[in-house]
Length: 640
Image 1 (tube, one colour):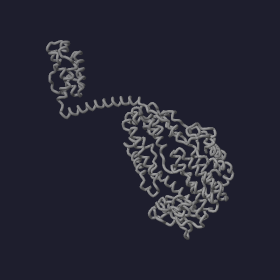
Image 2 (image 1 turned 45 degrees about the horizontal axis):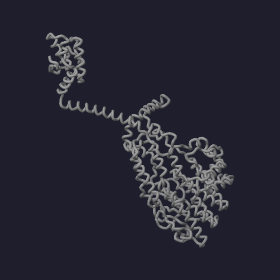
Image 3 (image 1 turned 30 degrees about the horizontal axis):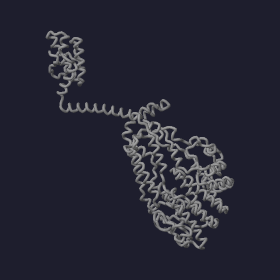
């Protein structure tokens, strides 16, 4: 036999005469030949029955060699290369298979090879990604502080005076008297005649001196709260020890942290508290016949609303608008209740206060939110230097943002061991990281999508109330909703979906309402000033220009001059309201509720009453002097 392996073509039999089912050589052959047969059979990597046939054929070949008088060594040497023999046997066996079987085999082979290649590429990409760390290019807290007004001297800031007055009035967070009945009554911001009014008024009478200090502090043009800086001992007395420890942060503490998200603005709560005190005191001053104190309270609360919006943080805008609404409603209420209380100069000051809010603060500005989002992105994405990068968050970051949904098996393990195996979670995150980097939207795409969403909200905030039903912000809300509902979108846009504020029509409309209420309040005081000068109420809105107002006050729901009348129902100024239907400023309509329940408060003070078609129209009445507070202290009609 030549050096090439010589193999007889044996029929594919599965019999067991002298052949074991595993395809190994029978015991009749010498040990060396049995070992060779077994080695070649295994190298073929064929199916079980095919290996049995190969083993049978090899055994027959060597039996013939021994029967011909050859020695074991001669039989082995003449056989040739075992590897080549195994290869040829494999090819021969595969050639006997059906075409469909061969095609399936090739498919499986290439599939396995592809999986190996993909796995190696995935692993290589994961190793490369592990060395691509996010780059912190700007300090977000420092940038926020740069957006605040410059403090030239501490005595020119309002915060120290407001803070010290609140501490004196036992409103420090750790002071047990903070929960006194009088303090709680003031916090409810009652009107005269309501249940909490006597306790609130008595408490305020005991706080005249610190209230005066607070009013004086609001004259300063800058709040001056030390955002992002260590809390002073004086501030700690107001905020409490626990809050003081978490009220500051810095962008340089750790790349795993999100300084803007973790930044605390505890002063906003205290500004709202101070505003309620002054607003209630405004009504108390009116009840006592002190027009100057009522005027100063109104000016101080409006000033607090402006100070709260310092830095244009979204939550600061929300607080500022809420404070301003409290002041404006009570200013109009005082004018309707006691029109002779205020002098001519005090009326003018009240009107000026209502219109003193800078125009920029009455329009949505999300620059601080943009900066916060950009800070999050720079900490969670790599940076290629051209504005793009891959999603590369740490496990700690995902946990802080609640993106990390710990699998059930890990939670069970955590329950058994008393603590989550951090190493297991970290390993899992490293395995998933390359897939997340490939599937989650890239850095540039994420920033562009975020900008497209929030820019609609800002655009909507410039619209008048009558155009809000066609606002574009609802499109952003729908897109965000789809991102959260669709599993693929939820993963691809995870950063945008969960970190974009959902403002919708309501968020943008709030700024339009703020502008409208300021105008309504100023118009009411202008009308009273007109009456004092001319001895009669104005016939229409044009009468107020230019002596008492710079332009004709416009109804935000109709786009036309606001309506006025002095008929048998008394003088009143009104807007046609959301439905656009003139109901002659009816003061008796109440906000409808569900069928079978009592109707709610009088609706005439509400600038945006939404009612069903089967309910009567409701106008927004700006001013209706009747010498009472019935429109404002919301007495409910008993159920019938």
